[in-house]
Length: 177
Image (cartoon, rainbow, N blue to C red):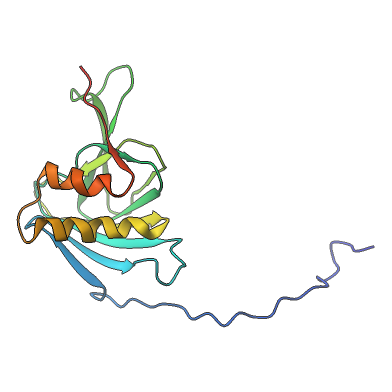
């Protein structure tokens, strides 16, 4: 009979899977109008599409996408520069006057948005903001590529954003009232 002190009897061979190193300033750059810039750091091709990651750069006084939720993926956000305002609706009780609450995430703050959690973000402040954003599974990275294609160098509009969202199981929050 094995005890806690006994070493494992089955050993797995060491896999031969390389790591993927993304140097600073490397990665595919995606421009969404003149407002947002993304740097794709992992498109899922190195993780069997289990994880995607981008850096998002938001200029001062820039709004984000319409309030929405994701049917098929989770997201995380790690603020690396400036302050990002995360908005989320309130089903009942007092809010911020716009039918919801917001949290101002500063450098080092981490936000987890699970599947079906309504949210959006913005940078209403006077300095550039950046965050590291992950998606699991990774397919959502292609939402940004589609949006850039739909914009064709033009400016982002809620209509184009909604069109791209519809292709990636992302649902706008219905306005209350």
